[in-house]
Length: 330
Image (cartoon, rainbow, N blue to C red; front, side, top):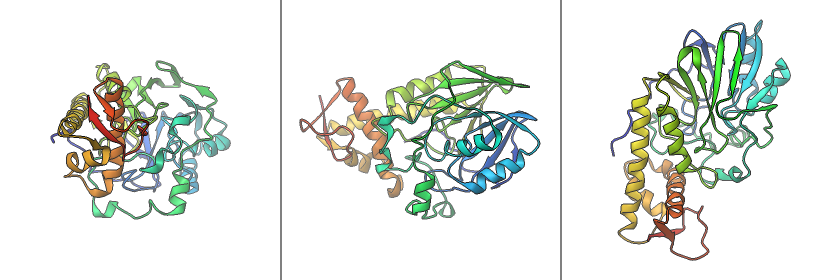
């Protein structure tokens, strides 16, 4: 299936603060995996007086390197795209060290707790990863601890869609973009006509939509939020390289997701199937290790189609969040 042209060429420069634009710097945490690509990119907006976006996981070395790089500067805001464990947990340590307030949409949603049955935090259904990028650390207890969802997150200031956070030389607009998780925000940097897209759009792969909190319908609407902003010209994902002239890329993501949904319906037209059955056919060209997380996205599509009365569960009373549940077309 044709889709967006993913960007897999990226050098992380672990522990170094790298200039990526006049107003943006990035430091990548050394937490690479099939779920995080090369690792979590923490962005710093501004010079002297700054905002820090997604401080990262529970990783003392990353926080220490970030503080060293920011020595002599004032952290005015700590901005969180969402509460998966590779994005927000380090905000507490950074806030303690700097006194800066933490801002985000809200706490980790109750319906997202336990979604890690088939994935850890934010994995993808079709990403390309080299052999060197497949360390077997996802089963390590320390990796699991660092990447556990941030259920303790409680922002000092809650941000709603359209809220503005500003500092000397920068203006940031919060964009509520649920789908991957219901409390996801992107941050539009007005001065550079750019958007820090978190996990909503990741250039190296598609984004997992894990039910019950992950919502494909919301995700598609959130893609349209970016498409409806012609003033923006570039995306900076938390994982991987910037996406230049991103509207074409986002439109391709939208078309790709709708094509997946059409494929799901086509599969059900041949008879009752579970999400795992559908994945075996639709994702036959995708690495087997990604089939479980892909099934989570398929489930989210099935729940959307259930709401639209296009499908139903074959067995009355069966869970709609199990990859083994059998579905049929209406």
